[in-house]
Length: 149
Image (cartoon, rainbow, N blue to C red; front, side, top):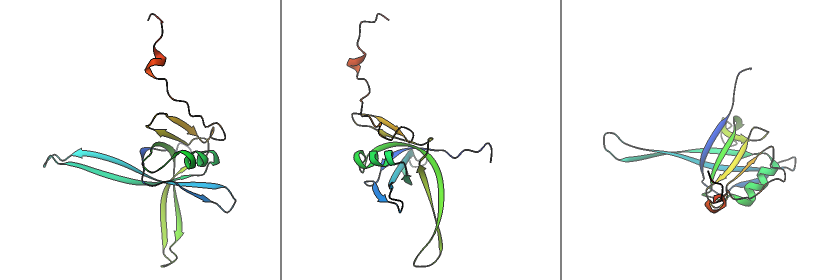
């Protein structure tokens, strides 16, 4: 269908260490549990409230799977760009159809950026092959120079 878009942008924290699995074809896949939260003040009571949503993230790109495996742990803050996908499966016990909605990170229009900490790195599906690089953003001292403007 022309003119449609399936894009998800999330910033959240991992609720558990990433789970790395081998698929039947021998490639690795990473599964992440990502929490996003919003907080507000109740107008009637003045009480602070918070709501947390949990998202299933599935990383298919081999380069990103390696990055996830090496660098991400429970509590890590990440920025995710991916697409929604709902899959259907049968519950083995009841035989009923079940559905799971996940954010897929695969292809050229997906990325994962690690936030917080000493270094901030963005790795997209496109450049994740062997290009993961751990440069730190410039510090204030790096920006001090003698340019007179």
